Image (cartoon, rainbow, N blue to C red; front, top):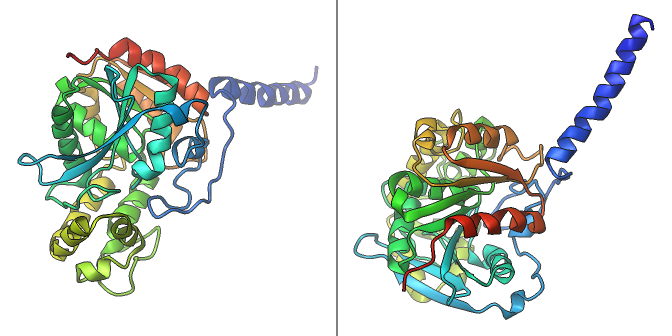
Amino acid sequence: MPIHSRFVVFITTLSITLPTLFAAEQNTAADVQNDVMDVTLFRGAGNNTWFEVYFNAVPTAGAENVEMQTRDIDLRPERDVTLHVEIYNPNATMPLIITPGGNGDTSGFGSFARNVAAAAPELKVIIYDRRNLGQSEVSFGNEPQMIEEGEDLHVLINRLDVAPVTLYGMSSGGRSNMILASRYPKDVASLVLAPLTGGPLAAARLSEEYFFKYLNSENLTTMDPISDSPITSMEMLSETPLWNAYLERNTPEKQQRFYNADIDVFRAAMKTSGTHIRSTGEQTALGIDDRDLAALEIPATLILHHGSYIDYLHPITNSRAALTLIPNSTMQFAPYLPEILDALLPFVKAHTPMIKE
């Protein structure tokens, strides 16, 4: 056979084999471009099959029958904030805490928690609004946002008396959960990252979308500032989409707490949090150093990925890299809810102790 003919055969074979291998590895997940807008998310935030699985999910069979309790849990004196919490299957004895992604809250992601609870009645499925989101109180703090959230979660776990618990973190929720796991490993029975955020593109986009867009002094590269003029009062901040929605859904007491906050404290928090995210763009996971990932003392970590290659906020390569760094970790591709449940439920049941009476 002439050399050029053999070359054509080789290229043809390669073009058939590689897609087949990738499809098998990823359970044939499709690349999805989501253009849905919501004040808690942003266009392109969910370029994957998980968007409809997580956000305003369609109820599965039996989900409407799942019992749910709502609680507002005061974390004082340790933390100056009250968090809104929803508990599905409240009488169950195996705890799973879900931390939403983006600036998401229980109103958008609670339907996913309910679907998980419907699939496993033995799981006490807990989902909550992080500080400054949903129906939780405003409290800006001095540390980067994900560190403040991780510290809040530590106290919340103690208030609920569910340690050690399995933590399920979606994107930004996973970052908060990793901080908690790094600082308080005894709180955590196992960790689920679904998906893991990482890479310089994510660092640039998210540092601006969540934080720097409120600061006109910052040089933005991925978007425009949210206001043409500097935001110099809480009243001006209240007119921006995220905060306007926050105020509309909350009680007069929580609204007043927002207006009583110091705009300079808010601006400092945005600067601190944006700088923190931007500085970790070269690390495997956004917001946490590789050495801290490698030092995690968690019995088991499950990294889930939807399999989409166009999701630049949650690159497959970063999930693979995390797999090599995090001790006792495994990784699975799970593009839709059935595959997520097939991976998640046996993992939770294998690693989560029953709550002691």
